[in-house]
Figure 1 (cartoon, rainbow, N blue to C red):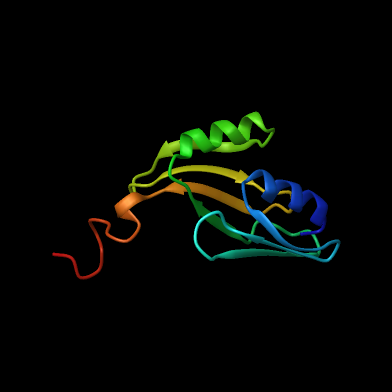
Figure 2: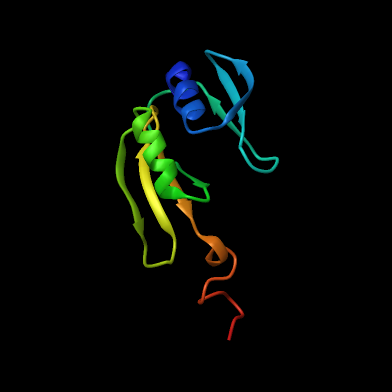
Length: 116
Protein backbone atom coordinates (compact mmCIF):
# COMPACT_ATOMS: atom_id res chain seq x y z
CA UNK A 1 0.00 0.00 0.00
CA UNK A 2 1.56 3.31 -1.03
CA UNK A 3 -0.07 5.40 1.75
CA UNK A 4 -0.06 3.61 5.09
CA UNK A 5 -1.81 6.52 6.82
CA UNK A 6 -4.78 6.03 4.48
CA UNK A 7 -4.58 2.27 5.05
CA UNK A 8 -4.41 2.79 8.81
CA UNK A 9 -7.57 4.92 8.79
CA UNK A 10 -9.39 2.50 6.48
CA UNK A 11 -8.65 -0.66 8.48
CA UNK A 12 -9.36 1.05 11.80
CA UNK A 13 -12.74 2.09 10.35
CA UNK A 14 -13.34 -1.57 9.40
CA UNK A 15 -12.91 -2.43 13.08
CA UNK A 16 -9.43 -3.94 13.13
CA UNK A 17 -7.40 -3.09 16.25
CA UNK A 18 -3.91 -1.60 15.82
CA UNK A 19 -1.09 -3.77 17.18
CA UNK A 20 2.06 -2.26 15.59
CA UNK A 21 2.43 1.28 14.26
CA UNK A 22 5.67 1.55 12.32
CA UNK A 23 4.31 3.93 9.71
CA UNK A 24 5.17 4.96 7.09
CA UNK A 25 6.54 1.49 6.24
CA UNK A 26 4.53 -1.08 8.26
CA UNK A 27 1.38 -1.54 10.35
CA UNK A 28 -0.23 -4.59 11.94
CA UNK A 29 -3.78 -5.05 13.16
CA UNK A 30 -5.65 -7.69 15.16
CA UNK A 31 -8.92 -8.95 13.78
CA UNK A 32 -11.90 -8.50 16.06
CA UNK A 33 -12.49 -12.24 16.58
CA UNK A 34 -9.88 -14.90 17.30
CA UNK A 35 -6.13 -14.51 17.10
CA UNK A 36 -5.75 -13.52 13.43
CA UNK A 37 -3.66 -10.51 12.48
CA UNK A 38 -3.52 -8.44 9.31
CA UNK A 39 -0.43 -6.52 8.18
CA UNK A 40 0.21 -3.71 5.72
CA UNK A 41 3.55 -2.95 4.10
CA UNK A 42 4.42 0.21 2.24
CA UNK A 43 4.85 -0.46 -1.46
CA UNK A 44 4.14 0.83 -4.91
CA UNK A 45 0.59 1.31 -6.07
CA UNK A 46 -0.73 -1.64 -7.96
CA UNK A 47 -3.83 -2.98 -6.31
CA UNK A 48 -6.31 -5.23 -7.96
CA UNK A 49 -4.32 -8.40 -7.33
CA UNK A 50 -5.41 -9.03 -3.76
CA UNK A 51 -8.84 -9.85 -2.38
CA UNK A 52 -9.28 -10.01 1.38
CA UNK A 53 -12.39 -11.58 2.92
CA UNK A 54 -13.61 -10.58 6.38
CA UNK A 55 -16.53 -12.52 7.81
CA UNK A 56 -18.98 -10.62 10.00
CA UNK A 57 -22.18 -11.75 11.71
CA UNK A 58 -24.44 -9.05 10.25
CA UNK A 59 -23.24 -7.80 6.87
CA UNK A 60 -26.16 -5.38 6.42
CA UNK A 61 -25.61 -3.69 9.78
CA UNK A 62 -21.85 -3.55 9.28
CA UNK A 63 -22.19 -2.03 5.79
CA UNK A 64 -24.66 0.53 7.14
CA UNK A 65 -22.31 1.58 9.94
CA UNK A 66 -19.27 1.74 7.66
CA UNK A 67 -21.20 3.70 5.01
CA UNK A 68 -22.24 6.21 7.67
CA UNK A 69 -18.54 6.48 8.62
CA UNK A 70 -17.72 7.46 5.03
CA UNK A 71 -16.59 4.19 3.42
CA UNK A 72 -17.92 3.68 -0.12
CA UNK A 73 -19.14 0.25 -1.19
CA UNK A 74 -19.08 -0.94 -4.79
CA UNK A 75 -21.85 -3.48 -4.22
CA UNK A 76 -24.02 -5.20 -1.69
CA UNK A 77 -25.00 -6.44 0.66
CA UNK A 78 -26.47 -9.15 -1.55
CA UNK A 79 -27.07 -12.88 -1.47
CA UNK A 80 -24.76 -14.84 -3.77
CA UNK A 81 -25.42 -18.12 -5.57
CA UNK A 82 -22.74 -19.79 -3.39
CA UNK A 83 -24.97 -19.08 -0.35
CA UNK A 84 -22.94 -16.24 1.14
CA UNK A 85 -24.15 -12.68 1.76
CA UNK A 86 -21.51 -10.23 0.55
CA UNK A 87 -20.63 -6.56 0.11
CA UNK A 88 -17.61 -5.28 -1.83
CA UNK A 89 -15.37 -2.25 -1.45
CA UNK A 90 -11.76 -1.30 -2.14
CA UNK A 91 -9.10 -0.13 0.29
CA UNK A 92 -6.96 2.96 -0.42
CA UNK A 93 -4.31 0.76 -2.08
CA UNK A 94 -6.81 -0.64 -4.59
CA UNK A 95 -7.18 -4.04 -2.92
CA UNK A 96 -10.60 -5.66 -3.11
CA UNK A 97 -12.28 -6.20 0.27
CA UNK A 98 -15.27 -8.52 0.69
CA UNK A 99 -17.35 -8.40 3.86
CA UNK A 100 -19.38 -11.57 4.04
CA UNK A 101 -21.46 -13.91 6.14
CA UNK A 102 -21.46 -17.58 5.21
CA UNK A 103 -22.73 -19.19 8.39
CA UNK A 104 -22.67 -22.98 8.17
CA UNK A 105 -22.10 -22.77 4.39
CA UNK A 106 -18.50 -21.64 4.93
CA UNK A 107 -17.42 -25.09 6.17
CA UNK A 108 -20.40 -27.22 5.16
CA UNK A 109 -21.83 -26.09 1.80
CA UNK A 110 -24.24 -28.47 -0.01
CA UNK A 111 -21.46 -29.20 -2.54
CA UNK A 112 -18.80 -29.99 0.07
CA UNK A 113 -16.23 -32.54 -1.01
CA UNK A 114 -17.16 -35.94 0.37
CA UNK A 115 -20.77 -35.04 1.15
CA UNK A 116 -23.33 -37.36 -0.36
